[in-house]
Image (cartoon, rainbow, N blue to C red; front, top):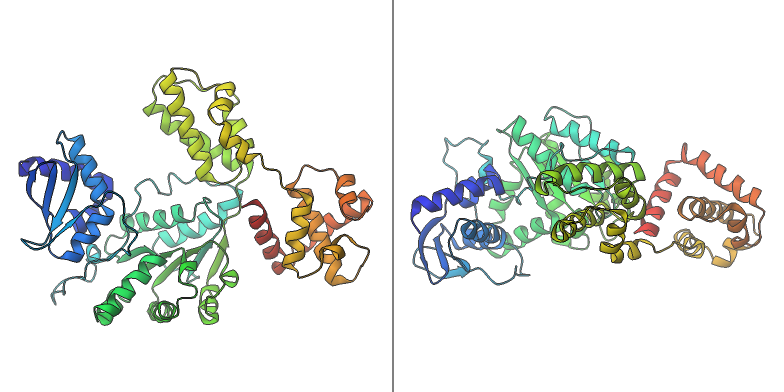
Length: 460
């Protein structure tokens, strides 16, 4: 393949992987030959080739074929030394980042391209994030950090269940910071990647290089921090990295699937550090937010599926029926548009029911009052028999009222029916319990946190 044509492919890759990733990982590649369906590239180091193979080989392969070249796989080699082939599937081994080259004394610290961060998804920006009541505080806090000015909270800790937008907000912050203040050194990666890089540094006896990289950033963003729980040496390094950055007034943004205090096997001193900033919960989506997300996605799809008509009421139907998480919701809409395009039909309610039958069945699983009672009893360490029994001592009565409140909120059962499941209590007793919990939620932060956690567990 002529190098000029590879140049055109690289131009397309800039749009796909972003400017920083392109300069760091794609630009140094030198195409050596294309023979027998194999495109061979020369890379600076074996670590560099391994990283590109794991993270960008699919993009390179796709764009080369789109440009009209029959390429079955890509390989990366250091000069004439051993090649690092791209496997048929993404390998399960730890991702290794290349060791950064030593900096020249005159080189600016703002050269963020040297940072070994994970690729940012170009789709995950603030413009594409739909804001609703369940996520408005998290969005506002993320916006504040993304402005790049001084903030009153450090770290920002975002947590919530699967598919609620944590990673989207993390990527959006990084994109916005790079746009507003390109001189800042912004490092985004998962906790798993942090651990792998630390373990590699230990093996290669390059711990000081690791420390220099991670403690010289202006903004450190670590996704899914619960992954390091129980991994002592990684927690130790994370703790010292965290302290070093805070001491320098550098911003830290962390995400996890639960609040810091709920992460099992996470050291208490790390929990304490994570709780000293702003801890924000992304709540499960409500109907209005789900409908807003669907409406935004439809606008994007209209350009791709020109002429495709979606009947009134379909989006409202999906927003009402698919309540698990945003990923399932968006996946359902994607499938629906693709199917309607293939069969050349209008997206009607009937078509949606036929096309999405499996997703709708899975979403139809009804939460029972008995499940709620068991989960609440387990959380507060009381017997299930006491939950529905006559005892009125505080340590039993309060969990009982919480279970009543959740039964009213999460099931379609009437108050009399809920009362029957709680030992034959009158519906006025259930009503009193629900109102009591609603009052306490406004003043008791611990109870509010307990309710949010129980709701996530029951709906997850």
